[in-house]
Length: 234
Image (cartoon, rainbow, N blue to C red; front, top):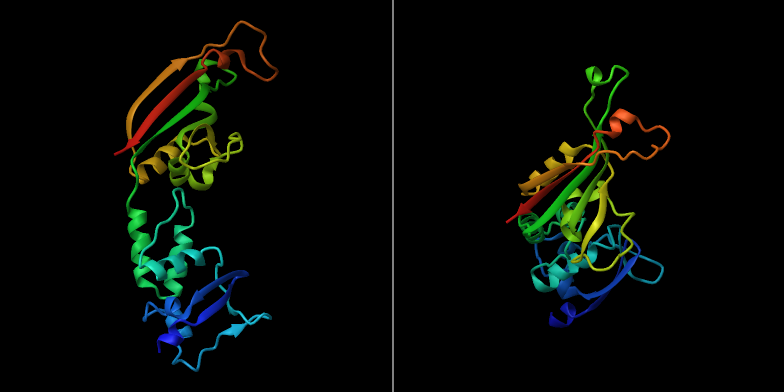
C-alpha cells in the first residue's frame, strides 16, 4: 500500500503542469481529489492529456495553493493576495473543508496599518454665482500607504498606472489614486476593512492671479482646496 501511495502523479490543471504523489492528493480522505486518485477506486472518470497527464479542468494557477495545503495541512497566502474568493470556490468544489476554514480565517484576520486618502477639489458655480453653488467637485482621490493594504482595501478600484515601481508589495507608495471620484465610497471601503478615521486636515489653495487655463471658471478657481484623511487599523 505504501508503494501505491508513493506513486508519482503528473497533472495538467487548466494547462498548468504539476508533479506530486498519490499520498498528497489523497491526504484528505473526504475530498473529491481523494475520490479521484485513491488507488482502490477503479471507476474514476478522469481523462488524460496527449502526454499522459491527468487533466483537471480547474484553475491551474490556484492549484499550487491547494497542493501546499495538502502537503502541509495549512496554507500561507502572499500579502496582497487578491484571489481569496476564487480559492474558496476551488476548495468548495474539491470538498476541501479544512482549506475552506484556513482561507476564511485568513480573510477574517487583517494586518494593522495606516492609509491616507486625499483629494483636491473645488466648488462648482452656476450662472447665478453663489446662489447656484453646487456640491464639491473632485478632480481625483489620492491614496497613500503600503501597497498590500491599499490593494486589500480598494481592490479593482485602485489605479496603479502612475506608480512605476512594481517591486515588493511591502513597499509604500504615494502615487495611487482611485478610478472613481466618490469620496464616500472610499470611506465605506475603508470602514468595511476595519479602518477608522484617526485625523484629517484641509487647506485652501486659492487660485493665483496668473491667466487661467481655458475652461477654468474664475469664481470656481477661488475655492480650490485640498483635504487629507488618515485612517488606521489596529
